[in-house]
Length: 224
Image (tube, rainbow, N blue to C red):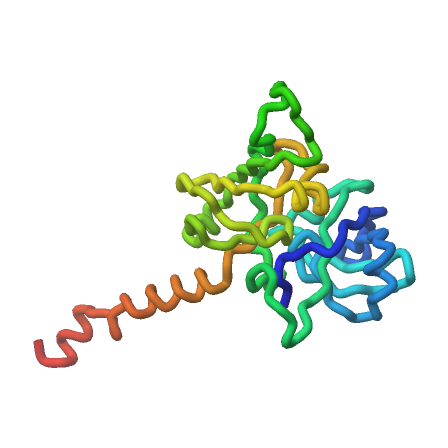
């Protein structure tokens, strides 16, 4: 389990096809030195298994499901990815419960400073930002205003949702410490809905379903 508090970014070095999977190599001095073969880690919101670890690099294999559902397979060498190690049991939950099971890739539609760049005293290092992301249709049912969402593995709060697009306030620390400042409009971004919202939605759907399907065959069998 993760909490969506990004520890550092890494740099994608390469993507290579290996017998039905695609292997990525990530340069991540700092986190790489703390990994062991087989450890889990979050890579831009995707839970992966670390392979061939050394103090500077790690590798991970992307299955077809990961390539189909996330943005990782479309990245080019040099791209920055967000990295987070799993949360140890008993540790403070700084963000929200993030599984690393991405629901789909959305599209970044805007990432603008709250204060216009033309304003006197504008400072890119200290301004807040407004992020807008078009959410895949299969994920929209779980977008809740003031609820949590993981974007590229970052735990964020939905400020507004118009039915297709979420709007999120981004602090300067988040903007510069994660890969957000490297992304351009149109970039795919990994979206994971809050698992608690998904669980609540599933329970509501289950509660609203009848215990059986009322069919003609059932009516005849029961003497109606």
